Length: 278
Picture 1: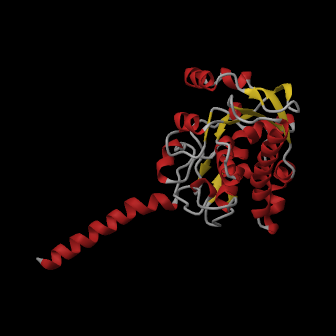
Picture 2 (picture 1 turned 60 degrees about the vertical axis):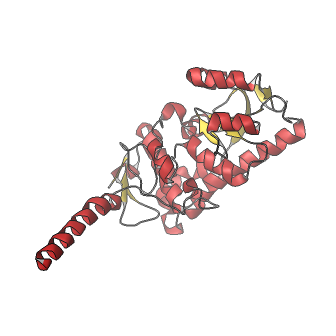
Picture 3 (picture 1 turned 120 degrees about the vertical axis):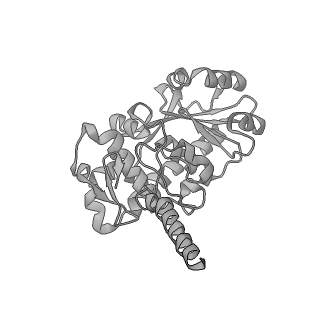
């Protein structure tokens, strides 16, 4: 009887091992957001317009003087560079020719100062309209921002109580429909993480996986990735995700050899194809 029980127990454990772990072996290490698409992709703006237009606003009552605004924008520009240059630098030298078509966008990302967020607000729906009213009339952060240039992304500096109301009581910041909400004392790592969402990557910690697009690919949890808030810099995990999103969102209009599949930067056994992972 004990022998039969031991055999049944071992069979059950083996079955659970296969059911639970095999899907992870076929899963993508990164996770794209549910709502990624050409219409809300910063990659599209980068390629179509040659630059990503960013607006910088402050909630009424906060310091948005010229020097402060310039300091905020400088840090925002640095966050973009951390992402794009970080991805290019992490690609092995022997494979850089494989991704050479992305080099112009990764090595020297162009960021411009936009002042017009009307289009962004018009796409956000009732929820964001109420948030806009809550913020009052957000003021343009700096006269250096072009009031006629439409923004692809707006970074809004808000008070602590406003941040909690918009993002949740425990959030350090958040991204929603083209807007990143940050406190005055935000850390550079935080803005880099939120930019990851603006690019189309989902959180990698368990509570954030519900935002991941399971139709494009599933996600194993990478505790050391930036999108899991566990790494100070872009990792190979995010490099895979950035290249994937470039291909998935933009390359149908400009087909290239990667549509036949390319090997993951992280895992040579993982093949990534256009909008799918094997």
